[in-house]
Length: 341
Image 1 (cartoon, rainbow, N blue to C red):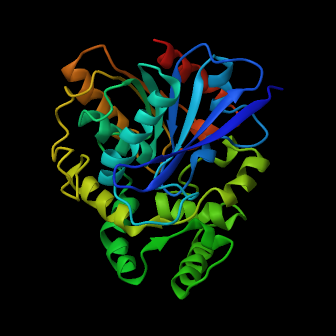
Image 2: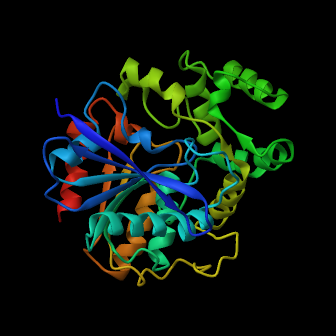
């Protein structure tokens, strides 16, 4: 078994928020390839790429010789809760993370593997021309065109405005400890309606983030250890994000909300980035439907035919793309091949 050396590298976002990168390397060998940045989704953390008891994408990248960097951006549960937006992450977080990696490694290029809202916000950075050093972007689940199931859309339109008046955040961790009346009520409602497993955090993840039982993975794809590990990998996600996503879903494309001058209101122009995109999606995804990535690939392919790629993964959903029991055989080789092109 390979022994790793981990290093926490603090950096400051463009607006002054303290963030960090986790640099992971083999203890006995130096990387022979350049840096790869991994960017997690909403309400989780960099650790979400490293499930226990099985080979991970981090393992695969290090074995292939890459210098691995995991970004804890402002949506990370390892940081104090904050009412973030995709705009803030796109302008302030990801460009600063890329600059820090360049500073630390002296590399001229960075490649990236980005997931869910780490993907949407990173794509916004790229299409605004804010991360010109990034040459390859492997994006999973959703990028430019968020398409969700009908029940998810109904929750965004009807439930989010109500909950926004009651609390700034919701959290799957309420399945372990429900500190408020809203938390207790939501947990009771989810327990009454979700019977797919005995893990209340897993059930709350499905209710908060998608449609289905479960929504973000297929239970048959997870080992018991990973299913139990998930209890500690989700926490607060702000209603500010869900309000923005409701607007994006309504319009069918990423939409800004903060009026920050460094990103455009319209992301149709893909000419500000030279990066090649590899679009990944699980065919059974019930958080963002596969059509999300299919539409985005078509959008990019129409502007540069044959340059970008699309992978629709049978038997996979949303996050099990990274921590499914067979992901090391089914998924990681495809991602490594894209990074190596």
